[in-house]
Image (tube, rainbow, N blue to C red; front, side, top):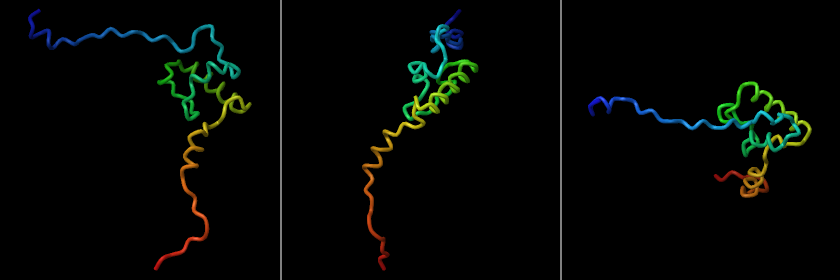
Length: 101
């Protein structure tokens, strides 16, 4: 091939296949906190399937396990650490407000 044709040829990158986040031996269960905590964001939200790289069936099972753990108080519904920091920094006004004319 001459150089002019090589410029138009698409460059093929070799992709390194990522390992699945759930191995075949892992059980998706509400008691398996080390597994469940990997699929929750810092704010306490369940991460999406695209971010987790899970199959549809695995994502459903993870979602059910997280919800069961929240109901049984093994996981919090919200991560309130940031809310407390923000609440402390906001000054509160006391007393009635008066209008200036």
